[in-house]
Length: 470
Image (tube, rainbow, N blue to C red; front, side, top):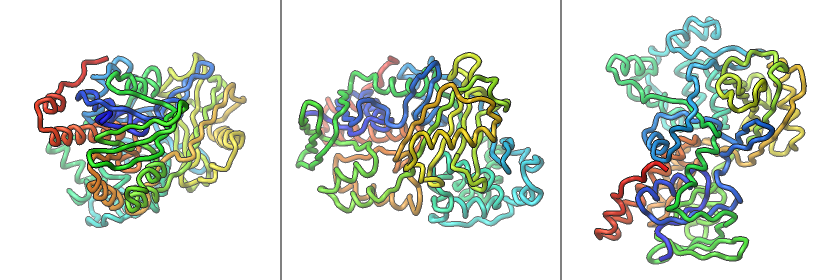
């Protein structure tokens, strides 16, 4: 056997699995088909602007992520963001501030009179719904149509790239649906937890001084893992004591035998590797759909923008009939992303709402973003720099009964010892979720290695202390 673990895919999922394995002393090799690591996450600097290719910040409440940041040496690089920074949505062509405090929801002019009364009636709504209930149906049933159209639809369209009419509520709104199932009401659940002093896990929102590229660099800065870029997995075959894999590289073919394989590649690539071994599993994974996403970065002199930019940015409800999903600006929370006296606007387009952007060229995408931002923010001058990042498979769509599909995938995986999947189409699209997924897969592999060996060396390896901060 050449290595304990082969990881296919060098995005955050694969890198996280490799990092956690290395803390246990497990030898791993990672193959990434691209010349760089990180997948859709990374930071590019252009003319003093720090432009993110995907996620620009992290919202964390998981101890695994906190442990990783401390142990990897990333803590000094953290850049805390204001959790109370204003958020906006577009209403009738203008930006309106979204109320974020629970107690103020009933009194803000953001809601109409009927919408306000509907929110107040939420505790009176009986428990309902089932596993297949859509996000739209859940929000409408509990909070009303206005809450869906003004807040939840634009939030889900930007965060998941999905259509809430098709997305499963328990998949994209798990915390809210859990409150209803346990307490019968969202508001009652929040109140009961407060009275019992059972506060939800503390949340922190942050990025890093070097952008999200700092996260990728910390994950890759791992001497316990052999990383090979421009290495494309082509064949995966089950053997009696493990797996045999073949990859295409610039130097030719590379063959490797491993006890465990972790697939952290997009669904279609995973399906191609799995099809010769298990066509049913390949069909379950290959049937998952993705939505395209484009990010348009626009750098301006601050004086060229009329709006105060006194918050995080804004989202766009579908009722506004725009290809634009939203925009984040650096002035309010990420001032370090732009040179002095300048502002970076990062606009997001596409998703399930506007999949046609996959057919547009970069000039058309940038033009659409600039036209709509001009009307909403009062742009007085042309940007001094424009960069477009396109992801043809930007976000996996959590449409249909996704939880049942995930259960079916995991059930099929049990038939293939040593095969694991850590990917955003199974257990969450956020960077936080990907680190947690890597932690879980690494723990499972270590447990199986220990059970298979049963020797003192395996026990020592599985219980080895985590590495000191780099």
